[in-house]
Image (cartoon, rainbow over all chains, first blue to last red; front, top):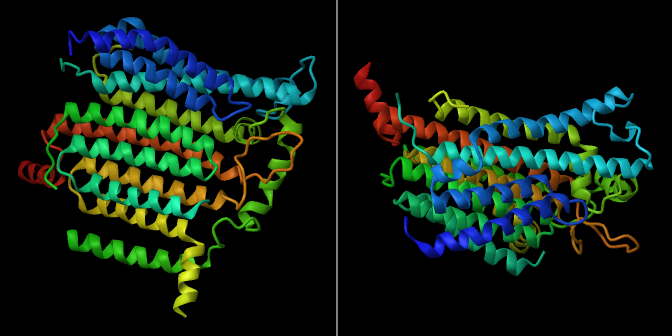
Length: 142
Length: 81
Length: 91
Length: 125
């Protein structure tokens, strides 16, 4: 596995395309099959593929564990923050149409739904990568 | 909604489920379970649930298998029953 | 153990298969599950939220509180794995 | 009599399929002593329940619930799809936590067979 040229070259070539497809699935969920959860899982699978081909220590240098831990809570913050913003402007919790944007009501709801999808995608991507790091790497007990 | 297709997929599903809980090598059981998930995703796509089929193909056949294989490689491949 | 498991499975299976006879036929459009709130979602999704995928509209708009719980569940799973397996004191 | 029963079964065949797959998962959860086999059984059980829900959503002649404005197609019921989408997330979360517990059990006892763990526990107490 260590000196397998084919796996490493193909991984290096294919990882950007997997990430691009993940972003497409997240952002195109409004008008076709897809959404935040599926896109986040596909995005995380790119990092998992990198970790399998190059080893966990090499993958940890590309996306730090600190980043995954912070991003996992960032996604939930985005989601709940949009809901609380709606309360601040006099609507219900997660009632998007109360937000004061210069757009008709349905378009505000569509736009905010996209932001919510991005939040879910960030959380799922970070948590899946973090779970893979935790499970695949053996930790020395001190 | 094509009942012949559903029956054929159901036959594969039952064979995969029984094989996944019967086979003694845990790595084989995990791989058979991935095949089970993929067949289930095909069945849901045929029943017009495209979002759920997409999720199952990404999660059940992808992430869950990776997690199972990570755990099997950290513990043991041997199973008594 | 194995005999008792088989016994329990047979009893549960017989009860479930007996009860399934009362379910409406597969693919019937007039079942209670298909008539009340689902029809409202199908008719009003595009006007309300300007998105074509009805599943996304329900997931992120009509029932977004549910989805917030889903995001919290997966966040909690990640944090509990961090507590269970990562004991070196790293973040 | 027999024909009526066969017709009744044929009208609801997907629900019977879901029950049979669910029983396989239930048997694995009760009878198998290997912990990873138990988790695989749990996953089979969950997917059987999902199959039941998706079956209730299907409509004869329906299409996938992605709107095409200006046409009058019949759409399948989108509500069970949303519920199951949430349930799949919960399923993968529970699977991950259960597998982490299996790793900790193996680190503590050196085995993942249920009866051997019980034996070790009885010897030590």
